[in-house]
Image (tube, rainbow, N blue to C red):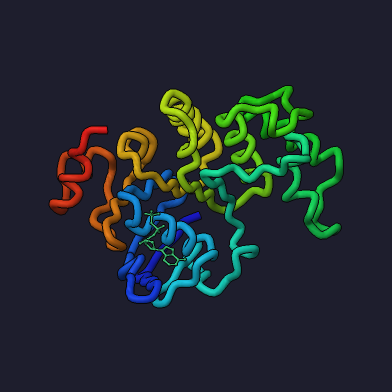
Length: 241
Ligand code: ADP
C-alpha cells in the first residue's frame, strides 16, 4: 500500500512541528524518518496514523484520501518505543488481542487465531513463548512480540516509532538485521522513526531527513550520504555516532 503525504502542516501554538511536508512512501518499502529530537518525526508518523490531525494538507492511502479517516479505520499497525504489552496477558493473548476484540462476524475462529499466533511467533523467532508473560521477556523480546501483535491484524502499513529506542546498543544492532529480515519476508510498507543515522542507513530502502519540521531530503542511503541536498543533511549525516 502506498502512502502519500501532500503538503502537511501541523502547528502547536506558534510552533510549526511540520511545515508543508510532501512525502511518498512506495508500496512495500521500508522508509526511515530520520532527524534530531524535535524535528517532527513523531508528529509526521502520528499524522500518517491518524492520531494527529493535520492543519493543512492531505494523507492518502493507495491514492484514496484518508485525511479524515479515524485511526481505527486506517488499518495501520504500530510499535512504539515503550512497549505497551498487556502485563496480565500471555504472549499468545497479547498477539491475538486485536483479533479477539473484533466484532463477532469478523473474528476468526479460535483454531484460526491459534494458527495465526503460532505463525507470527515463528516469524518473530519466538516459537515456544506462547505462555510466557511480558515480565518474563527481555526488552528485545517484548518488542518482537509487539511487532507480532501489530502484524496480527494484517495492517496495510506498519508504523514504528523508535521501536528499539529503549534498548541497549548491542540488542539494537541485532534487531536491525532481524527487522530487515522480517520486512523482506512480509513485504509490508513500513515507516520507521529514528534519530540514529546508522540505524536508518542500515535498515531503510530510503531515508527521509527532517529538520525543524521541514523535509530536507528523501533518498536511498547512498544518495543522502553521497549527495546531501542541503547543508543540514551533510552535517547531520556527517556526525559520528
Ligand atoms: P521528534 O519526533 O522528531 O522528536 P516531534 O514530532 O515529537 O519531534 O515534535 C516536533 C515539535 O513539535 C517539537 O518541538 C515538540 O515539542 C512539538 N510538539 C509535538 N507534539 C506536541 C504537542 N502535542 N503539543 C505541543 N507541542 C508538541
